Image (cartoon, rainbow, N blue to C red):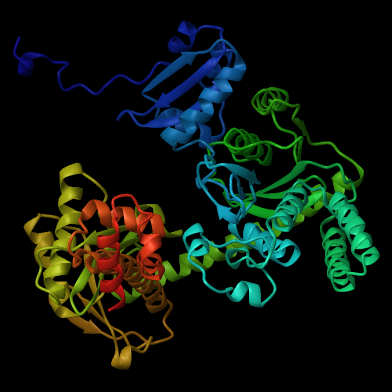
Length: 615
């Protein structure tokens, strides 16, 4: 039958019958996924009993307005039965992380957390900041709540134990002590100013200190001080005495009253649709610092729901402490504790009703959560005002939802890079930043570079039906704006407001000229206008992102080109040299004998390299 003769061919799809679907569900544990009419995932949840849990959405007489709004969009529900509720918890976490459903509470910070790395298998191990896979030989201490906490700890370790923190390529090529030794923060093992055994003692003490065994370190140092004094080595005894005094001061600052604590204290505050979780981290009675998190609110945004989602997502991705102390009781705390205990190999306690020192620390976390949330709300309000002011200054009827800005960076036409930064009403969306290496354009042709970058960006958006901005900022004047308008016209992309931001006299902030509309009308807002401030912020971020990429590309090109000029040094040998010495600077510092240690480099080639780099 011809489709045109079928009366149901163009009929609207039937609404989802939730009650009928619930009747088909098993009473087993599992995970359910709620989908909209386009197949997008609205919500992911777990259940000890799928029929009862999913039935709560469709069989209750009245739902919370936010929950009702989500249920109204449901076109399909899928489920996966699991053997246990613990398996359902793990699967739920994986699906939330990969699918990022609109109505789930999401922990937005997806970076791996930083550690302190103490290398192993070396005569003179190094201590360093580390983020990423923990596959290298040695020990990893952490995770720390922030990069700042790691750097603070590394700075302290330099003062206490003088273990090197330099890169191996730098260490291997030193001929005299560096500045760190001169200011008393490294014992200069690179040039043999410390005996290997003495250095290994410092390394062992550093590891003990990071393990929370500072008292044991002090006891060993005290015994060593007595031996030095007995041997009439009074200068050495005085140095150890000062080291002990510093350790005791640090111990007094970091020590927690309940010294056996290996715990995190989490407090949550929710207001005006924004959630904040503040965490205090303690290991072996030592504070590792604190951090505020702002999960994306979901369909249920009470403090208990946010904490439950946070604990599951956060600790299933990283090691849990012995105790997680919460400001609010959460549903399923026993199940979460069992799963975390199984993954950790030791018991993990999740509690919310505590007294004494623990209660004091929960109160401290709650106070910090309230302060951080207040600051976040004030920032959002300020951002909203700036966003409205931006709309006013460029003549838009309403604040834009998405702004993109393009900038070009090069040095006399060399290594041209274009940047694209993205902002929305909440600020920078760094995960969507992009850089474009420009090729096939005459050196210094900024118009051509801008056209190429825009074509690559918007051609892909057209092909993949991707997002396009409401406002497109171009760092430049009428020429750049005309180039941008031409690209979007060729690709038949409309609805994008293109605005040029031309620098003022002597590039002074506040003197920018905006180029607006098809007629390329010039407008100079008042220097104090908050809309201009918003544009300056976005433009400056695009410039920063472009110049960072340009410098990296330029240095990489120059590194390679210096070696390309040397006869007998092909791509494979160049790569081996740069890898072995950690870059061109390391190659330049190496002598002929050191160059010969690189695979594929014989004496003749080593002498040519040395002569070319030092001639």
